Image (cartoon, rainbow, N blue to C red):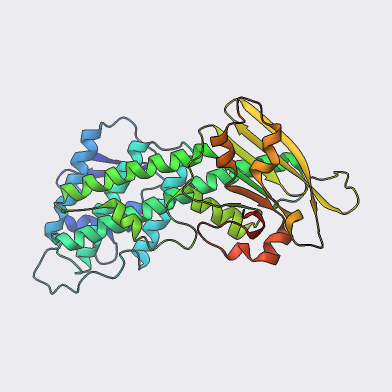
Length: 363
C-alpha cells in the first residue's frame, strides 16, 4: 500500500494515502498511544520537509471523524492532567534531553512540537471535550504545550550543566555532592531555544487562527515554578541553592558573559588544614581563554557564619589578569556566593526562592 512517512524527531511511521480514521484511532487506542508506539523505529533522514507537512495535514484532516453532534463536556483545567498528558510530557522531556545531547536537531524539535499540538487536539476531540475548532480551546492547547516545552527546555539545560559539572567533580575525588558548576553556554542555549519555541508556538497559533496568542504571557503565568521558572538561572538556583545547598545567584536576571564557567568544591580531599580550619575549598573560574584557580579556607567563627560563606568576586578578583579584572565582570561575579552545607543548614537559605542576598554579604 502506498504511504508517506511521518518524520517527527526520532519518530517514523508509514501513513497510508487513503487512511481511514477507524484504522488509526479507536476507543482502545488514543492518538498519542499510536504515535508513542513508533518511538523505537529507525529515523528516516531521506524525506523532505514537504513530505512531513503533507503527513501532518493528513492527520489534521482526521478531525472530521470526531466532530459529531455529541454534547461537548468542555475542556479540562489542564490538558496535561490525565494519563495522555502525562505520557506526552514524559516524551517532551525526552525530546528536549535528546536535543541538548545533540541527538536531534532544532528542526526535529519543531516538528515534534507541532505533532504534540495536533495529537492533543485530536485526543481532546475524541474525548468530546472540544469540537477542535473552538478558538479558546485551541489557545489553551497551544499555550499549555508551549509551557511544557519551555519548562522541559530549562530542565534539559540545567541537567546538561549538572552532568558536565559532575565530571569535573569526579576529577577532584572526595564527596559527590559538595560542589557547584555554572557554564554560560547552557544559559545562552536555554534562552535561544526558548525564543525558538516561542516562534514555533506562534506559528501553530496562527495556522489554527488563534488570535492574540502571547507566549510571553504564558511564561508570566506558568504553573511550573516549583523547581525554578523557565529561565536557566532560576533553575540553577534550584539545583545548587535549594537542593545541594552550596551556591547561590543573588539576582536571577543577571546575564553571564559568553565563555564564562565556574566550578566550586567545598572540601578538597587530602588538603592540609591548619588550626581552626574546617575544610579547604577550591574555586575555578574561566572567561574566554583565561582560567583561574585558587584554594581557600572555611572556618567556624564565634562571631557568626562569615567564615562559612564567600562572594565569588572577593575570592577571585585578586587572581584575575588586568585584561579580565574589569568592573563589569567583577560586578557579575558578585552575584555568586559559595558556602558550606553547615551554612545552608543553619541559615535556611535552601528554602529561599528567587532573588536573595545572604545576610553575611549585604553591604
